[in-house]
Image (tube, rainbow, N blue to C red; front, side, top):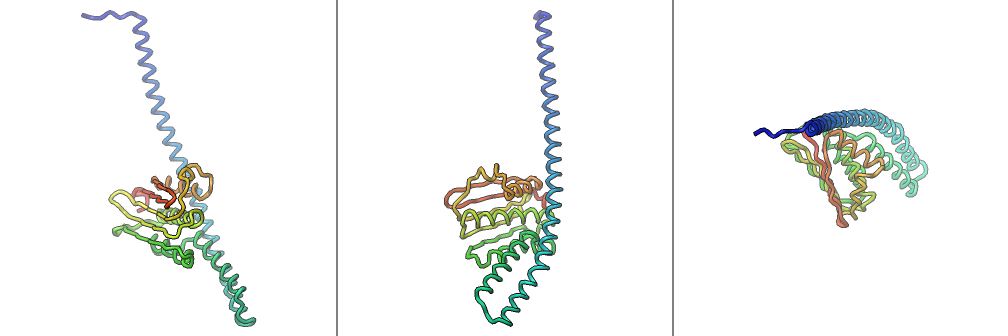
Length: 244
């Protein structure tokens, strides 16, 4: 038996169907629009960071090539003509250390010619070698080659995280692990410092965390942070295709 329907009910039914269709179309359009925004944002980050890297490397090379030789020559001249002066030597050593640190931050030595592992070990040895901090570095890539741009992003992230552990968490032991899995590469930076406010990694307006987050976004990765008063553990996972 057919159930009779009134004209009013039919109008209501048609209206409901139109609303559902419109809502579905609006949702689809918004999804496409948001995807385009994220893509444009990623392209903007890539362009900005690419320009910044080029300038940093140029400044780093100029700083190293033009300043370090002069300071070394001054130290040699003082030793030769005025005798050994411990205070002046300490000042010159501090200046040379500052320049080396800035050079490593601006232009990672060996990254383009050797490997990410070489650059990270070079950073630890030359910047933190006399700091008394214990570093445990492990790379398990299984023969995988990380390309230059992906390696540069990972290097900057590792350098920033280790720097944070030293400067803000007063860590005395830091572990850096990079491991390649079947579909992803994981970077782990762990320290025994005083911990951190995890919300800083999300809401901070500081250049350090902004750089880390932008690079993770460029690599289509994600991060996980666990922190308490006994230390901090930060894991970053990126697809293999983003770095190889």
